[in-house]
Image 1 (tube, rainbow, N blue to C red):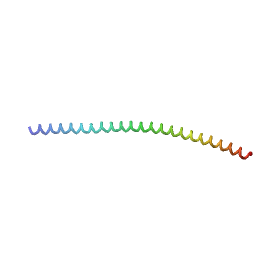
Image 2: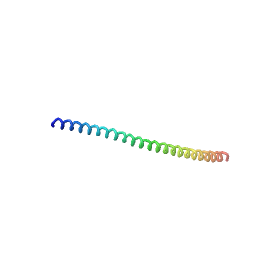
Image 3: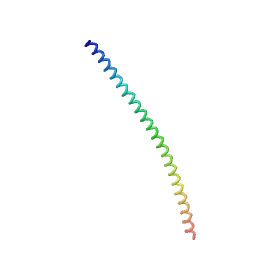
Image 4: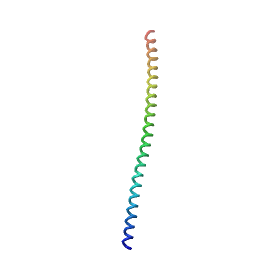
Length: 81
């Protein structure tokens, strides 16, 4: 009778240990998946933000070029007089 209890105890503890290990493994996979989705969202945001920054910079450069041409024209007019 005492031997049966030991066998049942070993079976139960082995099963519980296996289930806990499996639970940890599945949980780690879930965490990796969450990390991947967060990483993907951040990558998309960075790409979008970078594109907007490039557009803003090119617009700013165009405005500066327009101002420079106007200033050059005014200087040319002043030098002719």
